[in-house]
Amino acid sequence: MKNTPIPFEVVKQKIQESKLPSVGKASIRELVKLVNEIEKETGIKYVRMEMGVPGLEPSQIGIDAEIEALKRGVASKYPMIDGVPELKKEIARFVKNFINIDVDEQGCIPTVGSMQGAMAAFLVVNRCNATKDTILFIDPGFPVQKQQLRVLGMNYETFDVYNFRGDKLRDKLESYLKKGNISAILYSNPNNPSWICFTEKELQTIGELATTYDTIVIEDLAYFAMDFRKDLSKPGQSPFQPTVANYTQNWLMLISSSKAFSYAGQRIGTMVISNGLYKRRYPDLKRYFTSDEFGYAMLYGAVYSLSSGVCHSTQYGFAAMLKAANDGTFNFVESVREYGEKARIMKKIFTENGFTIVYDMDEDKPLADGFYFTISYPGLTGEQLIEELLYYGVSAISLAITGSERTEGLRACVSQVQRNQFSDLEVRLKRFNQDHRN
Image (tube, rainbow, N blue to C red; front, top):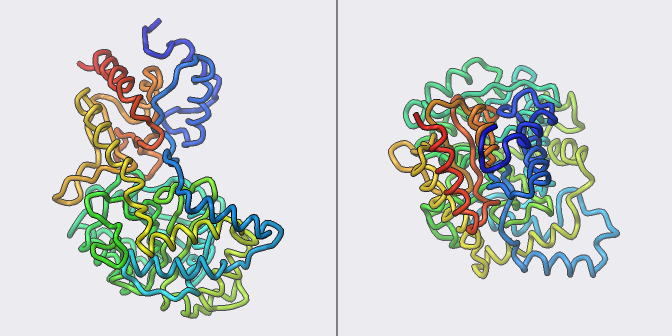
């Protein structure tokens, strides 16, 4: 029997009871369930890095506004499907103030988190042109978006951008687009799970090719303004959140409240559609929707079919936070800077104990410290590494389930790790390194 920080036989038994074909290929939620079971059995708290959920308190601004809305009686009323006017106004202001892009309020549609926004987007972009039925993911990326496409019975292709940064991106991207079947390109920026951030040159490449090949870009901004190398907190002042919207009109954005605003539990985000794309007409949309106008089909076809509106009171809470950010009275970026500080410390603990950072550069610049980072250990695949770390009280997910070709790597999320756990992490990783180094 091995003498590991977490009782070896308990971990082994719980893995067997989980019936997972491979712990290393388990989904995020499956790993959460497994670690919960081990913690319950042993009473030992894990250093949990498997799930990307916020670990900071939300702003009182949003809470107070939501309470006030409930007191006004909004809970008894269905919200308008396109969103309450106060929220639509502040979304448009926010996009101008922090991305420097002008967008009509009409194209600012609240969604039940970015996950609903992605689902709605897939329902429309894959039906604009009967010959274009495939989403292209610039990976690595959020695994559930591919799961959504599988549930919908839709096609997707993917490539890992690790070896195609900078000038190499154009030829790689074009090799897919020239086939003529790509309806949309999807990526997150900053990226989940690697935390890479596309450069302006790369965004320009994506935008120019999207225009050339008449392809829509779905820009997932779940980690808005969380590239902490830049101060993106001042409304109306440079620098702004980088975006492909500077280089094409064929775009829609998914902006989440979950991470940047620590409002994940209230399930609200927004889809922002460019003015040009919103009004554009695609005759093939009439196969599925009552209108061939992109924005109308999105709102009254796709979004409406998924929900009869975003939680009424939550819209007022989110609107209040956005207004405060727009007015310069709420520095939402500063409130989540803790993630970057924790990542810097945790990466150091890992690298001092034999681990390597997998995605470590943005072209020629060191990667930012943020919500996620990626790790590997010599001689172990990602699947092996996940299972081995469970015996040492550390959990993460495999990069393999994110579309990454770096199968030796894991994604580590910093949000649920408390600073008082850093000493446990260091002790456990030292032990792991002692037990595994050659």
